[in-house]
Amino acid sequence: MKRTALVLSVLAAPVLVAPVLAVTALPAAAQDGVSPPAAASDASPVLSLPIECELDRDCWLVRYLDHDPGPGVRDYRGGDLSGDGHSGTDIAVADYARIARGVPVLAAAAGVVAGARDGMTDGQLIQGDAAGIRGSECGNGVLLEHADGWQTQYCHMRRGSVLVQEGQKVDRGDRLGLVGMSGETSYPHLHFSVRRDGRDVDPFTGIEDGGAPLWAASVGAADVYAPVVVTAAGVAGEKPDWDLVQAGRYTSGQIPATAEALVVWLRGYWLEPGDVIRYSVVGSDGTPIFESVATDEKGNRDFFRFSGTRPPEGGFEPGSYEARVTIERPAGTVIAERRFGITIAPEAAEASEGRRS
Ligand SMILES: [Zn+2]
Image 1 (cartoon, rainbow, N blue to C red):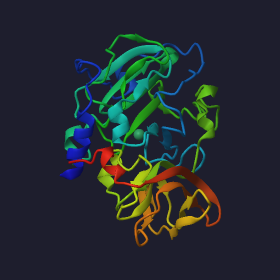
Image 2: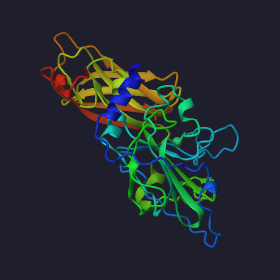
Image 3: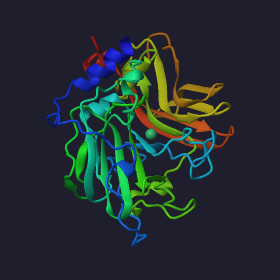
Image 4: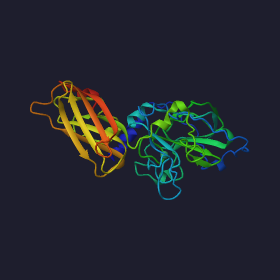
């Protein structure tokens, strides 16, 4: 299976930063771990970002805790950017190439390691091995115990990357391991859970629905809620292949003048039916060489879309261009925008990017 092979080869390529540690069980719930102390204090922890990246630049909040107790879905803002029963916050990175380069997972607050698991294969779910992860949906992960019955949990980490062991003390910001694709995950992200006395808590509201966020102000997490999230965009000199997009290809911003097409693509989350995607590529003199508008019929929680054009007679004109992609909801109201430079190179420069053999 092509996709599986690619994911695994991308993830296996770099040298692992840590030896594989002993696998210890992650308690399913707080009750199985350390018993909470008497509630002498209601002090909530202040959480820093549990992943080394900058929100809205190279990582994105794409799925929140589900506040709906029934079969419905409701995020802390009353939207539906969650999944039924989703118990934490998902922070996505652009692609598998990014996690192959290594994205550190960090302790959100000081605490003690109450459980750690490593050794599970990355990409098991997308290989179709749902049975193999049953009961271990978190994948390789770490559970931290904080003061006053608070816990944080970090899931889907990369095999062989977990750096801490049960009983170890950690400070805020300490590295716990790397973002990976283990357990029940179909896209590159860190799943981060917060609990108090065994109950899931949304870090965007604290214990009370509608309360103050637990995030440190510096995280800026409360400011980045967006109805649709674009996590990657680029240009391809051919019809872009989804597997290659996930592997990080078509991100150089460059195509050769001899390319068979100029295709602008974007990847993200929470596209809805009726959303309008507008693409344009404009030369430095302001002349558009490509424009296209599409009303999306399907919508997708996890989407990949593209639009492009064939070259004019004699090929594309070499030079610098600017691409712009917007999503409108409703038509005319821009809710997401990406701009990036494109270079059309006089010769087949794309070959130097390293075509997959
Ligand atoms: Zn999640």
